[in-house]
Image (tube, rainbow, N blue to C red; front, side):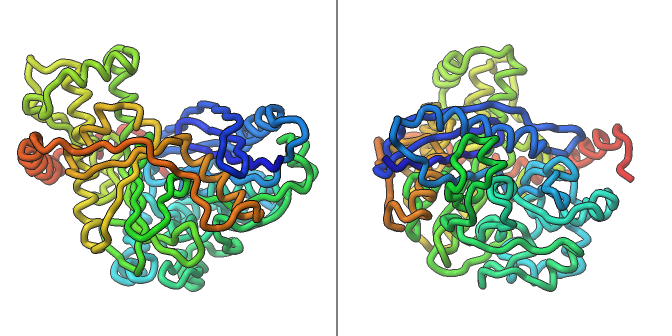
Length: 499
């Protein structure tokens, strides 16, 4: 029996799965981890002790559960992204990995590069304006603030390409991840922007570009020893976890859209022609020569987890029941869910959370429902921009947050659209297994393992209420931005300056 191993390294956990060529899941394993937040605006992982260590543990556990007589025919790893991992000649990380848009340290470098290269030129060539999501400014930050580390570095990776290098020794990056390494990549033409890349990366060579389903190499002896995978096992490139998750649930055709309910919300929509918008990300897709629009919030499940902790740590079922008992609209309570700044469409690293309309009548249940509504208003704001691409949408909801019925129903009510819930919601690791199966030739490229289990329809009786609340919610951020920015500056100045 030929089996495929998929592993995803998420923000809060890593998950692995073994799947056969029909898409049936034989075994799953999960390991939890915490993000390192050493300073305000910083978010990091130790790539060796978290990503690689967990890939090794998950591989060993899953290989041990493979049926006798079977073989692991291919492996594919996805991960959070885009991230920056700088390594020396021996593939030793030179510093902690700098994470995607939740790490907002490079605000000055964003301004420097935007002024130097031109905002319009960046949008036209890279497909997005520079923001905390972009890798280029983070490389520039290391060059300016940690010059000894930058000088020692010899190669740079994303999360999944770092693991691919650990498995095979190959220096590659997939087209999709590269297209989020703004402004280093020309999305319209699926190639590196050599001039800008040389300006920002300096002595660091650019990795070879591959598509996420391509075999990039084979497991070498040292990696086999650590992972338990057989020497010579084909390794498929993989990509950023959100895109692999979309792939896992059949988001493949123009107009298909994924709503990922995770630590953050992430949206992917397949488009049939190049379209750029300063409030969104235009990226390469997973399949060769395809394009997608993307957007992402900075909090979602992480906000719910935070609320759960600071309100006493009640069980998830308890707080869900309390939120469900509160009427839509939360008796006039609104939440801006910007506890880690905000990515699309605000692009404001200095944004912070705001609770408006609080009274003595409001309870913990009101807070949780208001948080779900605030997250949903943010998604409605993004979807308003997606509509400008003039592509009909079919929204597929995925991720751990889908198990919260109140969240999913609130989302449909706020955005006014049905959401299709797939039968299999394991996530990106399942998409990785499918990429591996395609990459090694065990299934045709058009294979789709997704099956829809149910549809969550919007309730029309709440449409007018949410239209009214949404209009007020949209006014809340610009009305409080000056005060919030000042508070952010006060909090930042309480720490030692970066030299």
